[in-house]
Length: 169
Image (cartoon, rainbow, N blue to C red; front, side, top):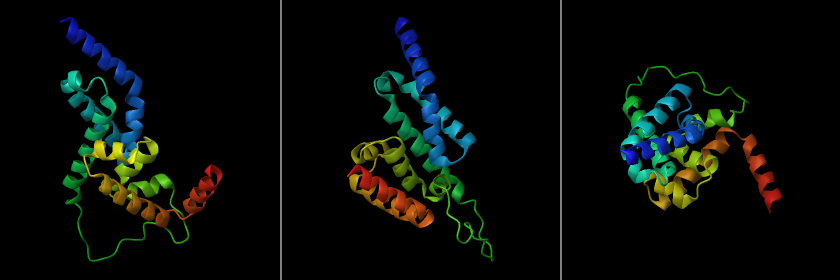
């Protein structure tokens, strides 16, 4: 009984300390506060059952569960969109830059996950590949595609990125 109590205590300590960061990551993945809470709750529920195995380093495991659940949910619900005979209004007004967070939400789920894990979570390409369960080359191509798309959506970030590189060089 003591072992179970100790595991429960470490789980509760972990959740208390890391839940806000997990929610922020989930929000960046899905762009919706309620869905982010659901992603974190679902991941934590799954983590309880496997805590003994993942307790030493739960963060990558939880990130992977959140990403997988988000992508699965996106696939499940994307078929519900209806095609119409008319074109929708432009998503972006002419001459208006999207904000980075807004542009991030327009990326496909896997590209968004790569960007969030690489830049927000500060993971290496290898760590990102491990969390997502994909090949390193796939991370690189998804990253390149995502950055290209973000530059199209938010042209103002191109100058920011170049000036940041100049300062760091």
